[in-house]
Length: 266
Length: 311
Ligand SMILES: Cc1cc2nc3c(=O)[nH]c(=O)nc-3n(C[C@H](O)[C@H](O)[C@H](O)COP(=O)(O)OP(=O)(O)OC[C@H]3O[C@@H](n4cnc5c(N)ncnc54)[C@H](O)[C@@H]3O)c2cc1C
Ligand SMILES: Nc1ncnc2c1ncn2[C@@H]1O[C@H](COP(=O)(O)O)[C@@H](O)[C@H]1O
Image (cartoon, rainbow over all chains, first blue to last red; front, top):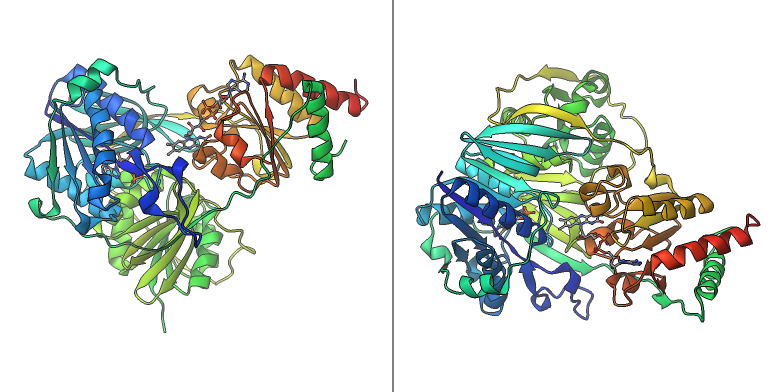
């Protein structure tokens, strides 16, 4: 078995959305964190490495700049993958390609694979990120590399040079087989990611994180998409906590309020 | 002046009138490709769309990608658009790479302006909305059911052309239908939402009892449907499930993740029951009850019954 690559994005954390005075999203004030489903991808990659052998490499392309302000979050995301059993990591951080888009990301991942001389048989990714939720980087990458592509896998195995996966679609599940090399995107249901232990985290500090710039790579496509405007959606909710001496009293108050609102008729 | 040529990919028959109406509004010159279940209805629609309708009878994303590339090339289409089914996310991401084109998914709006297209879509798990500009050629996937068409198209007779995609690398070896629960959350006026605060499938009967009493339906978070499988997936609400707009949404044992809450933004009133007073859902609810659902729901049900004269 050749190498296994897992893709990890340091995504804007949607739970910490920050708003500028004019109502736009204050992107620079929002911290980055590892995109939730990439945790599932890492977990699955570690499992497959244990079964198949080979080297497990994480690749992360920094989408949101400026690099200086983001390096700490980017390293934390990648270190989590290293702590969970990834052997080494490559990160691309360059302000000339931030804010990046999916065209940039896929081309940069391919460029890193070539530059590092990796020969991955399998590339794992998440089904979608928490900031952009586009589900397109893995499919783009598969096409650029000429690999098989199996998306939305909620069960995965590699047997005799073939990927066997259950794809989770809207109305049905389908089992597919595809020859290696392959890109696979996994769903949140594929496993239950365990947080790394303290010992794993300490050991990971010695694993290499290799940092590259766009100039170190060939064939990185600059972003094509332009963000014209980003507005925070106002959550205009009353946020009233109903209190009372007993649960009976609370229930009565709630029923009264819902009747007043006109959403409940008894 | 003829507008931009757009290849519209229909996956479900319902996509045809929606995409057709968008095309006429956007002033693009459409040609269609029908795949999956839309393929069987291509004949009916060719008679109404007044445009070429290519047909590829396949549900395999590798084959769909081949067909889209083939038609885009033959027709010199500068724009490829469809709706955001998982198989089209897969197929069109491959096509976008082949065309070196930017791609926007889950678009709610798209307008062609000169040699680019301006798209509106959710951002940050739909906590925000972004307007983005994609230079042509570009690929767009609209949210499924992104618009309610005013009726069936009546644009005259079109032409059907059949395609035979070659065998893809990825082969289907088995299919299993998913169970359906027969709920219709999009129409419901009251929805009781259940989350991981419930400890077992049996305990959901508390939520069903409440929903029945209120004449509402039961919805759930992703883990309840997709992971634990306590309810069928038509109950699943959120960014990757259903978007609902009831008058009243009662969220029970739900933490309030952005991915779930994006599905209930359209609710008039949101009530949250959660035992953790720091749960993020309380910031996104109109009325909050900080309590253990196992203690509070029986009391609420009892009170409702009393006041309805059913006690
Ligand atoms: C790309 C992506 C897409 C996603 N799409 C969706 C989607 O469409 N829909 C969706 O729902 N999620 C989605 N998710 C998952 C989402 O991030 C959350 O993990 C999920 O919504 C959490 O579900 P929950 O609130 O039921 O569980 P939890 O977050 O575990 O919350 C359980 C809550 O129950 C409370 N609780 C526990 N016991 C009790 C009790 N006895 N009484 C009262 N309260 C109690 C706890 O305090 C807690 O707040 C998506 C995630 C990603 C990354
Ligand atoms: N900037 C990035 N760096 C590394 N991997 C990424 C990046 N963006 C996306 N990915 C991978 O592609 C998956 C799908 O992302 P997306 O297409 O943006 O929804 C993610 O879960 C990651 O595994």
